[in-house]
Length: 304
Image (cartoon, rainbow, N blue to C red; front, side, top):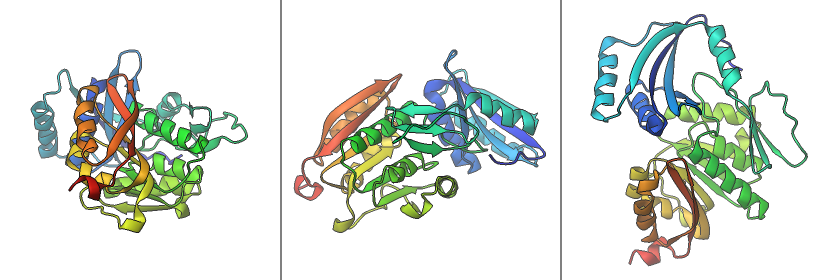
């Protein structure tokens, strides 16, 4: 686990769980930092935070920009907090909240201090909480991990593309499940740096090609299409980049689309159906709906 800094300030926004991703995006845009999220399962409240090591909180104009962005986004009952915390308290609090999770009994995601026993055949993913991390607990990430596990169990292990990799958890899992090649990209250089570090800790850094890119600019050649694509990003971006994402998938390949609110799922489904993607199954977890799609037509044929 990362050594605790001498001084630590936390800038946090507490809101309803359904607004967690909106708040996280605001933090990324303003502060160019990857936020940390803790969700209280009893109150359904999400605390989204960024941390400042050995330095005071951000300048006043950035705080004003944050307040304006929160107000413009129409997030009700969102409360802003700034406080200095003891590094030891920070470290121990994440040990308390960050616990191992099992994915279909074939994948274990755990912190390095966990004593959980890994069964024969289980894939062991180690992710320690730091000042920026993602752990697989979010419903949309959980769905992607489940589909990865199902695909591997069926023996359909091939090439894998992770769009919006974040901490790299999906790419790392795919590499450990023996998908090859594994390519992952994100438009945030900080996220890519974090993902590379996590991949190195899991000893699969040589098996994953990480890059800074986005959905609209990443266009693979005909020989670089993928058997399985995971895109766990906002629905408006999915819709806007439906053609580009579809072009990354091999004919008869699959795509896991996540990060979609239930009310927006039909629109995403319609956008991808124009490029030959057919919904195989979907699942709603809380207010999120994610789906597994199969590409039955080439984008080139379907766009004529």
